[in-house]
Length: 462
Image 1 (cartoon, rainbow, N blue to C red):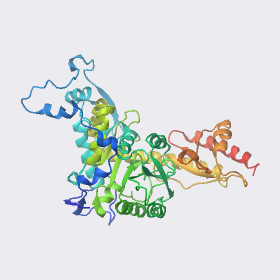
Image 2 (image 1 turned 30 degrees about the vertical axis):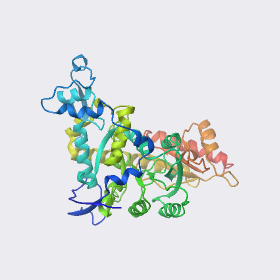
Image 3 (image 1 turned 180 degrees about the vertical axis):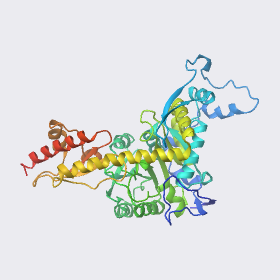
Image 4 (image 1 turned 90 degrees about the vertical axis):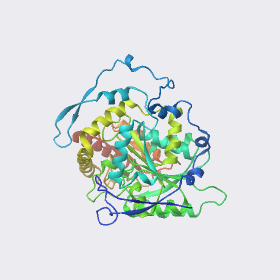
């Protein structure tokens, strides 16, 4: 496959650690996959989509001297919103201050915007990806703003997968994507994972033994930081091995990373797949999904996808026909806050968020050791907001946590998720997922005390 070569300069990031000695290389030669490479990746639905007769022409309205009779935009004179102020916390001092939306920003936020997002927010996020992930926008990628990362994932997979196509997923996998992938009639192939991330040996075996009569998977879906449900964070070694397999076997890594900024491990944060592909060779195999849900607000519904331009173009065509755009009003609020903070302010805020969840993790771990030692096993997470623990069920049990968690634990006053819901195959498992993001110390202690009682009863008091 031909490649295009570019030379980029890397900048210091907000926390990512390059794979060499902790400082970015002065210059890295990057080989860029050509646009034609992605033709075989696009689904039939994506290939069939065409720009709308109106939205496709909207950029022409900015032509100097042009009088536009094009779009059916409502007249903003009839919008009842005249100004907007909101309170925010300064990430450094934690003191509250008031922000007012600039009139131009408010006007833009009240009106239809471009499919890819409000230009000011796109520019800010593009700079963020360059700074944080040591990437250069000349490498054939761009950013699109989405209605949260779930919206982006759906549109990405819909742009790639045809009915019956295979899609590689972690085992276990985030339960929220299982019905999504099933609705697209994709065949989910489960790849084994452990505390270090995707088992590259499992992935390699799947790919090297793939039936010759069947097209290989076009994509691998992974949550590499604080994985939902397992809480695991993939190691550098595993990421590099998976990235190399993506190049060898020609698939896209769908890097779903809503917990990237919720990393609180003791070691420096491992670089993202998006970072690593530029530091280790050809770029264009990673389509990345970020979200503000975990660090700004889940209700604001603003996320963003970053990756190869042809794939982002296909996703934007879907958006143009489905929901036109992510809410420009929410985007206006987000970009006002981010510009107020600056990149260093965002860095400080995410450090505060990480410290908050680390403290929550520590409270849960202490209660776990107090009540469930000898009754369950766990590896404490280094990111995110989930515990994935194995209940030591009595001998001769089915090896499944469903009845104990859905029925007995619920009756005992505890609500959690049995691990089987995270397996597309519905496989039995003794594992359980518990979220520690909301509960205070007293509630965590009581919840695990109740769970202890339930497990002891199931074990006959032993």
